[in-house]
Length: 245
Image (cartoon, rainbow, N blue to C red):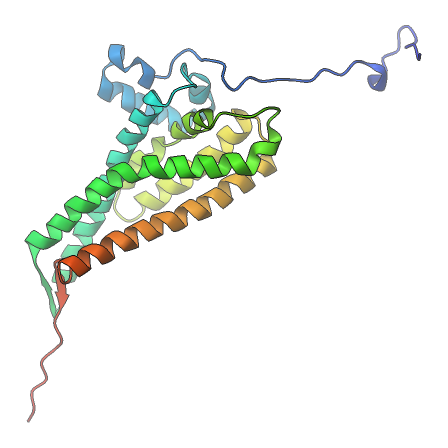
Protein backbone atom coordinates (compact mmCIF):
# COMPACT_ATOMS: atom_id res chain seq x y z
CA UNK A 1 0.00 0.00 0.00
CA UNK A 2 1.37 3.39 -0.97
CA UNK A 3 1.57 5.85 1.89
CA UNK A 4 1.52 9.56 1.40
CA UNK A 5 4.69 11.26 2.74
CA UNK A 6 4.01 13.63 5.57
CA UNK A 7 3.69 17.26 4.53
CA UNK A 8 3.17 16.42 0.87
CA UNK A 9 -0.22 16.46 -0.81
CA UNK A 10 -0.57 14.28 -3.88
CA UNK A 11 -3.97 14.58 -5.54
CA UNK A 12 -3.81 11.09 -7.06
CA UNK A 13 -3.41 9.51 -3.65
CA UNK A 14 -6.26 11.39 -1.99
CA UNK A 15 -9.64 9.75 -1.64
CA UNK A 16 -12.04 11.02 -4.25
CA UNK A 17 -15.43 12.22 -3.23
CA UNK A 18 -18.43 11.81 -5.46
CA UNK A 19 -20.58 14.94 -5.41
CA UNK A 20 -24.27 14.17 -5.29
CA UNK A 21 -27.07 16.63 -5.73
CA UNK A 22 -30.66 15.62 -5.04
CA UNK A 23 -32.99 17.26 -7.56
CA UNK A 24 -35.92 16.49 -5.26
CA UNK A 25 -34.62 18.68 -2.43
CA UNK A 26 -37.43 21.10 -1.48
CA UNK A 27 -36.80 24.85 -1.52
CA UNK A 28 -38.15 27.73 0.52
CA UNK A 29 -41.16 28.56 -1.72
CA UNK A 30 -41.44 30.41 -5.00
CA UNK A 31 -43.56 33.58 -4.95
CA UNK A 32 -46.21 31.65 -6.88
CA UNK A 33 -46.34 28.97 -4.18
CA UNK A 34 -47.07 31.79 -1.71
CA UNK A 35 -49.96 33.18 -3.73
CA UNK A 36 -52.32 32.52 -0.84
CA UNK A 37 -50.50 35.13 1.24
CA UNK A 38 -49.28 37.46 -1.53
CA UNK A 39 -52.36 37.42 -3.74
CA UNK A 40 -52.59 35.53 -7.03
CA UNK A 41 -51.84 38.38 -9.46
CA UNK A 42 -48.91 39.94 -7.51
CA UNK A 43 -47.47 36.45 -6.93
CA UNK A 44 -47.71 35.61 -10.61
CA UNK A 45 -45.93 38.76 -11.81
CA UNK A 46 -43.30 38.46 -9.06
CA UNK A 47 -42.61 34.89 -10.19
CA UNK A 48 -42.53 35.86 -13.87
CA UNK A 49 -40.03 38.67 -13.23
CA UNK A 50 -37.89 36.34 -11.11
CA UNK A 51 -38.05 33.80 -13.91
CA UNK A 52 -36.73 36.34 -16.39
CA UNK A 53 -33.87 37.69 -14.30
CA UNK A 54 -33.15 35.15 -11.53
CA UNK A 55 -34.11 31.73 -12.97
CA UNK A 56 -31.59 29.70 -10.98
CA UNK A 57 -32.62 31.21 -7.64
CA UNK A 58 -36.30 30.76 -8.51
CA UNK A 59 -35.98 27.11 -9.51
CA UNK A 60 -34.04 26.36 -6.31
CA UNK A 61 -36.98 27.81 -4.35
CA UNK A 62 -39.47 25.21 -5.61
CA UNK A 63 -40.92 23.74 -2.42
CA UNK A 64 -42.90 20.88 -3.97
CA UNK A 65 -40.78 19.46 -6.82
CA UNK A 66 -42.70 16.17 -6.66
CA UNK A 67 -46.01 17.65 -7.83
CA UNK A 68 -47.03 19.73 -10.84
CA UNK A 69 -49.98 21.53 -9.26
CA UNK A 70 -48.20 24.85 -8.69
CA UNK A 71 -46.11 24.80 -11.85
CA UNK A 72 -49.17 24.00 -13.96
CA UNK A 73 -50.97 27.04 -12.59
CA UNK A 74 -48.00 29.28 -13.37
CA UNK A 75 -47.73 27.95 -16.93
CA UNK A 76 -51.45 28.55 -17.48
CA UNK A 77 -50.94 32.13 -16.35
CA UNK A 78 -48.14 32.49 -18.90
CA UNK A 79 -50.34 30.78 -21.50
CA UNK A 80 -52.83 33.62 -21.17
CA UNK A 81 -50.23 35.95 -22.69
CA UNK A 82 -49.57 33.56 -25.57
CA UNK A 83 -53.29 33.23 -26.21
CA UNK A 84 -53.62 37.03 -26.22
CA UNK A 85 -50.63 37.26 -28.55
CA UNK A 86 -52.19 34.91 -31.09
CA UNK A 87 -55.46 36.83 -30.92
CA UNK A 88 -53.76 40.22 -31.22
CA UNK A 89 -51.68 39.21 -34.23
CA UNK A 90 -54.72 37.64 -35.89
CA UNK A 91 -56.64 40.88 -35.48
CA UNK A 92 -53.73 42.90 -36.84
CA UNK A 93 -53.61 40.57 -39.85
CA UNK A 94 -57.34 41.01 -40.38
CA UNK A 95 -57.04 44.79 -40.24
CA UNK A 96 -54.17 44.73 -42.71
CA UNK A 97 -56.01 42.49 -45.17
CA UNK A 98 -59.36 44.29 -45.21
CA UNK A 99 -57.55 47.56 -45.87
CA UNK A 100 -56.16 46.10 -49.11
CA UNK A 101 -57.97 46.19 -52.46
CA UNK A 102 -60.08 43.14 -53.38
CA UNK A 103 -60.14 41.73 -49.84
CA UNK A 104 -63.47 41.30 -48.05
CA UNK A 105 -63.88 40.43 -44.41
CA UNK A 106 -66.68 38.84 -42.43
CA UNK A 107 -66.01 40.16 -38.89
CA UNK A 108 -68.39 37.76 -37.13
CA UNK A 109 -66.82 34.66 -38.64
CA UNK A 110 -63.27 35.90 -38.32
CA UNK A 111 -63.67 36.90 -34.68
CA UNK A 112 -65.10 33.45 -33.95
CA UNK A 113 -61.85 32.07 -35.33
CA UNK A 114 -59.86 34.43 -33.11
CA UNK A 115 -61.79 33.15 -30.08
CA UNK A 116 -60.94 29.57 -31.10
CA UNK A 117 -57.27 30.48 -31.41
CA UNK A 118 -57.37 32.04 -27.95
CA UNK A 119 -58.70 28.81 -26.43
CA UNK A 120 -56.11 26.66 -28.23
CA UNK A 121 -53.34 29.11 -27.33
CA UNK A 122 -54.35 28.99 -23.67
CA UNK A 123 -54.10 25.21 -23.27
CA UNK A 124 -51.39 24.34 -25.84
CA UNK A 125 -48.31 25.53 -23.85
CA UNK A 126 -48.95 23.08 -20.99
CA UNK A 127 -49.18 20.19 -23.46
CA UNK A 128 -46.11 21.37 -25.35
CA UNK A 129 -44.16 21.71 -22.08
CA UNK A 130 -44.90 18.09 -21.28
CA UNK A 131 -43.70 16.99 -24.72
CA UNK A 132 -40.62 19.22 -24.56
CA UNK A 133 -39.59 18.15 -21.05
CA UNK A 134 -40.11 14.47 -21.88
CA UNK A 135 -37.92 14.70 -24.97
CA UNK A 136 -35.32 16.80 -23.17
CA UNK A 137 -35.16 14.28 -20.32
CA UNK A 138 -34.55 11.42 -22.75
CA UNK A 139 -31.74 13.35 -24.45
CA UNK A 140 -29.87 14.14 -21.22
CA UNK A 141 -30.82 11.09 -19.13
CA UNK A 142 -27.29 9.65 -19.25
CA UNK A 143 -25.94 12.69 -17.38
CA UNK A 144 -27.97 11.96 -14.25
CA UNK A 145 -26.57 9.62 -11.60
CA UNK A 146 -29.98 8.02 -11.15
CA UNK A 147 -33.38 8.02 -12.81
CA UNK A 148 -34.85 11.52 -12.67
CA UNK A 149 -38.64 11.81 -12.30
CA UNK A 150 -40.25 13.55 -15.27
CA UNK A 151 -42.25 15.72 -12.87
CA UNK A 152 -39.04 17.38 -11.62
CA UNK A 153 -37.98 18.24 -15.16
CA UNK A 154 -41.41 19.74 -15.91
CA UNK A 155 -41.38 21.73 -12.67
CA UNK A 156 -37.98 23.28 -13.33
CA UNK A 157 -38.69 24.08 -16.98
CA UNK A 158 -42.16 25.44 -16.18
CA UNK A 159 -40.64 28.23 -14.12
CA UNK A 160 -38.69 29.39 -17.19
CA UNK A 161 -41.87 30.66 -18.85
CA UNK A 162 -41.68 34.14 -17.31
CA UNK A 163 -40.65 35.87 -20.58
CA UNK A 164 -44.12 34.95 -21.90
CA UNK A 165 -45.13 38.40 -20.63
CA UNK A 166 -43.43 39.82 -23.74
CA UNK A 167 -45.50 37.72 -26.15
CA UNK A 168 -48.27 40.34 -26.31
CA UNK A 169 -45.90 42.94 -27.81
CA UNK A 170 -46.84 43.13 -31.51
CA UNK A 171 -44.48 41.56 -34.03
CA UNK A 172 -41.23 41.36 -32.01
CA UNK A 173 -42.72 40.08 -28.73
CA UNK A 174 -43.30 36.38 -29.53
CA UNK A 175 -39.85 35.85 -31.04
CA UNK A 176 -38.11 37.66 -28.18
CA UNK A 177 -40.10 35.67 -25.60
CA UNK A 178 -39.24 32.35 -27.25
CA UNK A 179 -35.55 33.24 -27.49
CA UNK A 180 -35.47 34.31 -23.84
CA UNK A 181 -37.20 31.12 -22.71
CA UNK A 182 -34.74 29.04 -24.72
CA UNK A 183 -31.81 30.76 -23.01
CA UNK A 184 -33.42 30.18 -19.60
CA UNK A 185 -33.83 26.47 -20.40
CA UNK A 186 -30.08 26.26 -21.04
CA UNK A 187 -29.21 28.22 -17.88
CA UNK A 188 -31.31 26.12 -15.50
CA UNK A 189 -30.18 22.99 -17.30
CA UNK A 190 -26.60 23.75 -16.25
CA UNK A 191 -27.12 25.55 -12.92
CA UNK A 192 -30.19 23.77 -11.51
CA UNK A 193 -30.20 20.35 -13.16
CA UNK A 194 -26.37 20.13 -13.06
CA UNK A 195 -26.00 19.14 -16.71
CA UNK A 196 -22.89 19.77 -18.78
CA UNK A 197 -23.05 22.93 -20.91
CA UNK A 198 -22.86 20.94 -24.12
CA UNK A 199 -25.51 18.47 -23.02
CA UNK A 200 -27.89 21.19 -21.88
CA UNK A 201 -27.52 23.29 -25.04
CA UNK A 202 -27.81 20.38 -27.47
CA UNK A 203 -30.73 18.88 -25.54
CA UNK A 204 -32.59 22.20 -25.45
CA UNK A 205 -32.00 23.02 -29.12
CA UNK A 206 -33.07 19.59 -30.38
CA UNK A 207 -36.15 19.66 -28.16
CA UNK A 208 -36.95 23.22 -29.30
CA UNK A 209 -36.78 22.21 -32.98
CA UNK A 210 -39.13 19.26 -32.47
CA UNK A 211 -41.55 21.23 -30.29
CA UNK A 212 -41.37 24.20 -32.68
CA UNK A 213 -42.42 21.92 -35.52
CA UNK A 214 -45.41 20.83 -33.43
CA UNK A 215 -46.33 24.46 -32.74
CA UNK A 216 -46.17 25.26 -36.45
CA UNK A 217 -48.34 22.21 -37.13
CA UNK A 218 -50.92 23.29 -34.56
CA UNK A 219 -51.13 26.83 -35.97
CA UNK A 220 -51.45 25.52 -39.53
CA UNK A 221 -54.04 22.92 -38.55
CA UNK A 222 -56.22 25.40 -36.64
CA UNK A 223 -56.10 27.97 -39.45
CA UNK A 224 -56.73 25.39 -42.17
CA UNK A 225 -59.57 23.63 -40.33
CA UNK A 226 -61.35 26.85 -39.46
CA UNK A 227 -60.90 28.22 -42.97
CA UNK A 228 -62.33 25.02 -44.47
CA UNK A 229 -65.33 24.87 -42.12
CA UNK A 230 -66.22 28.51 -42.64
CA UNK A 231 -65.45 28.82 -46.34
CA UNK A 232 -62.49 31.13 -45.92
CA UNK A 233 -62.40 31.83 -42.22
CA UNK A 234 -63.87 35.30 -42.54
CA UNK A 235 -61.44 36.63 -45.15
CA UNK A 236 -62.01 36.35 -48.88
CA UNK A 237 -59.99 37.56 -51.84
CA UNK A 238 -62.15 38.74 -54.73
CA UNK A 239 -60.66 38.43 -58.17
CA UNK A 240 -60.53 41.81 -59.92
CA UNK A 241 -63.25 42.28 -62.53
CA UNK A 242 -61.89 42.81 -66.02
CA UNK A 243 -64.09 44.74 -68.41
CA UNK A 244 -64.09 43.84 -72.04
CA UNK A 245 -63.93 46.78 -74.44
